[in-house]
Length: 261
Image 1 (spheres, rainbow, N blue to C red):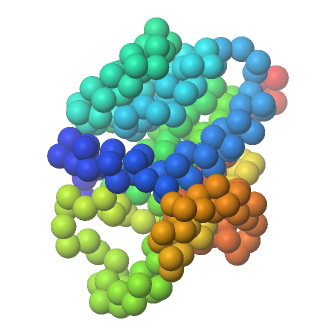
Image 2 (cartoon, rainbow, N blue to C red):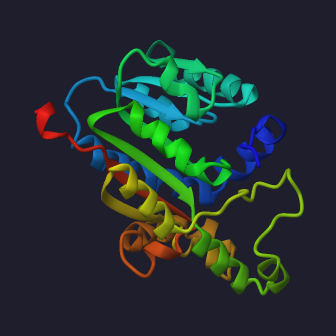
């Protein structure tokens, strides 16, 4: 097993993720969660690590607010796109780019960071606990991990509603490597357990696309987008909807030890 490099599907990723209603909902809910967690961090320019940052939309958004962002990714193609996006937005001065894995990024940091972004990456890595442990070590005490991962329950629900029983019987294993369907969908309870074992304190959770992808009338996803988004925002933090999100976002904090106060 190995971690996924997106060099071969960068353009497909861009078109199918960011250029759709599902991408717009993903970004809207994600920024609501980021806005909430940013109020809990020091009111100064933050040191941010965007691990597996892809095309850099989120990292550039934080750089636009004056934060210093190191974006790393295995994919040279994704890094090139992230640089171009940062230049387009005029935030290059607040960003650095390195072609390294999330597991090794700690070796390239001068000091611990205040915030780690790890969005839609955990489902592509072969050793998730190792990666989360490495990211924990990059955080300063009191720092926050913004984790978004592909939800196994959401995939199962979507597969059931489509009647794709053969895929379920095959344990949701992909037939083609170049598909955008993640390699390792994650069980939320397992992910929460990994975080707690490392010492993280889970402060907040939200489901992303808790019903959009299950809508029978796909035209309404576009025609009534604002209403759909409003309902996503209303139900994303409520069970049972939260646990059926196609993605789940977790805000997890590294505690401050008594001897660090």
